[in-house]
Image (cartoon, rainbow, N blue to C red; front, side):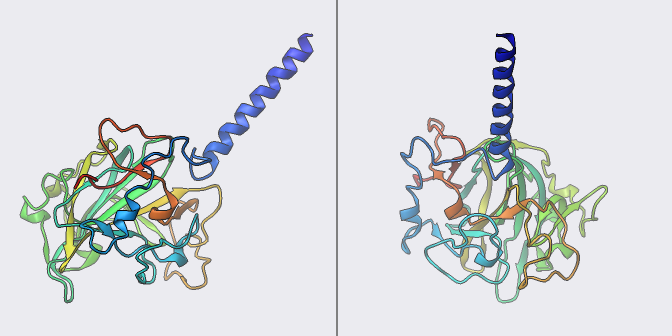
Amino acid sequence: MKKVTAYILLVLLVVLFNFDRKAYSASSALTKPPADMSGINEMHKVLKKSNSKIRFGTHADPKIITLGPQKGGSPGYTAYKGKTSMNIKMPLDTPVLAPTDMVLVGFDNRSALRHGKFTPFDDLELCFESTSQDWPNMVVCFYHLRTSPLLPGHLINKKCGLVKKWLGSSGSNASGRILYLMNESFYGKGGISSAKDPKPCKAEIGRFVKRGEIIGFSGQVGKNEHVAIKFKVKSDKLNPLTLGKLPKYKPKFKPTGDPYLHWVQPAKFFYWKCFSPQTKFSDGVLAYPFQCND
């Protein structure tokens, strides 16, 4: 009898161990649609309308998506080669909300008065790491922000303002972890030196933000008012893009970063729901990055 009991306990332990591995070895703990589908993706039909104040813009380049659906759907604008983000058109200075619990890990202030024919060119980028067990190791970055409360010195201190001409990261204030198409960089001690001193920006690196908190305000590229959002999601499969093995995206240098992180199409990959302090979110569901009642 004791042997049978011990065997049953051993089997249970093995089952629990494997269940835990299955839940977290892939992209998330979410293995099926939410039990409660009320309110899920309900704003998508509004975001697809061309006359909506807040609406979908250009989605990520389908050819770089290596996890989940490759196409972002409506409105079907052609993405430039290597585009990692989903654009959401919204009026200038619209509050941008955190889709999940996360921590600020990096920023890059590339904003300029001019970039080519575009005046101004808001290009503040913030990167966050998920702290939710629903999405372990996920990285979320927002760019084309005008400003952010997480950088109290931005646009206040002239040394953390807009440069005359856009120079990208070679002329920006930057600190912490920033993700690019095929690699990622770390600005600061032990990493790359920022082109401009990041201290005047007073970035609150390490700051925890809860789902629904304001992380920034949408910017503009010329007359195009919007924000861009990109997600890299953990998988148990290697990313051929990060390994430099996608034929149409041959790297000019050796790619860097976690090879198990994959770019996804946010509009199609995730389940979304409007945020309010009273709203209950099922496991894995993200908050729309804007206030739905607007």
